[in-house]
Image 1 (spheres, helix red, strand yellow):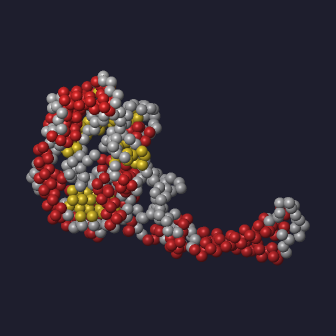
Image 2 (image 1 turned 120 degrees about the vertical axis):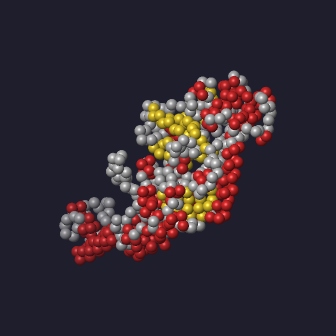
Image 3 (image 1 turned 135 degrees about the vertical axis):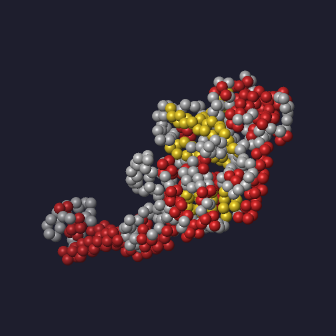
Length: 567
């Protein structure tokens, strides 16, 4: 990641700096004079074989001599004209040669005209050399000097323009893993380097990246990001699977959707976006049905023949009334069981939600907070989109990782991956440095327990991913994501086939199955466990967070720090 965090700011192409203003004027005037003279001196079309004063046919002589002879110039005039032409050619050649940059790297956003030479492949036991972590401001001045510095400054004054966005080549996974983490302790021992940072952000996921961009770009602050994982992007990180070259999400499918126009404009700063409306299919009773529930779901599973919104509304009302909880207002529900039956009735609840909840949380819905099933949509029409009410739905055209690379590509931002914040604060120099503000995006209970708190740890659920590569030139599943609500089809909650994203072509296909698990060993926490007891413990941590913010300007942001699932 050093190449994104440490590269100099974008520059114009070297061709834009080849001549200064006066040199350009001279070159243009000279070219115009030559063109005008040659136009007057060239033979007419109706005189293809004019004789020169020396008696030679014009086509048998050099171009300049032929033109002079055709015009009937005297030898002295001809020689003077040819000398001027040769002189002008020499001046233009020397000007171009003197303005050629010397060993100047292209740090701009424009891609190179030829692909860069790939680094040599190293044995698995020998890690590649990490990129340098020198900040852009520390790049030696000599690296960008040319013989045309004055011309470059003149060109900037004459034609100021913004650099258009050009996507970088797709990032490969290995380029994101072998980073500058091994050098980080040495950097921390350098007080001058540490002292230059104003803002500390723990975590390079969505929350941390957007905060870093805002502080660096809008407020001119120097931002230091510490990321425990060996890559940026948090759970949105994607990469190309090595056997198939298919772009996949490492931590499960992530879909972007919003109704906020300002958010939609913001994400376009760093990437092009491909329209994508998410649809999910569920395998229930051996049948493939739309998820969330709509008219087709009811007809396929329960043998009904509903055909309109009014018929669907009447059917749902009758199912709710016949359920054990009756027509319960969902806002009055005590647990997720009451929410599920209060929304779709007992029959659909048992087929779609009861066992699926057990798979996901290892408890049945009656043991969970109402919030879990409250966020599951139910449609009264044929619409099978998962987010039917969101105006903007899309995927970043080159993947999420590329979006994060662009967002963090700023001279005021430096990122260190494979760097644990709790290891860093053990160093006296780091612990004693006072940042203007610190933003913590990890587990809130982990933060305070590392500070000595004896409050009970909060509960989370994790996910185990099983990747299967199939010899499948087409697609294996009918949809990108297929849910498996019943144990009869296995213990996995869902399977994602990434060919469906971006309509990727490959002779094989990648299927990633997800199994919900408890937190064991170093398993990643994904979902806060929504029980009343956990919520009470979180409220205690939130009081500590308020004190920490007031005393040390530490802010807790994101899903883990707020112990909340953000859709």
